[in-house]
Image (cartoon, rainbow, N blue to C red; front, side, top):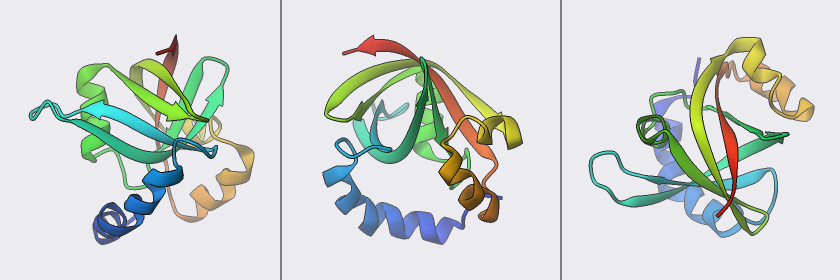
Length: 129
């Protein structure tokens, strides 16, 4: 069960503004750079990103029905900025439940379980951009 829509709207309007200042610089925070599927506009969405080899995982705390998730799924590729570097990702896939939770850092799993977050997005690294 994702977090409430009201919280998502609040975060998008207020919290994300501050998060954008640090998201591309302080791991595990990252900035997803994606293109609007209808508008063609480039967006930057702060997220928590977890790397395991060439696979990156993202906890979908507000569920899969978010514009940034729809945009990356439609495009099939996107970039993330983390630690000051830009990395290309492709082949985004949704993973649900424990298999998805196993892909994120161990210290976040109890929190995600408590929040009933059980939707995740994975993508494969294509290299630096």
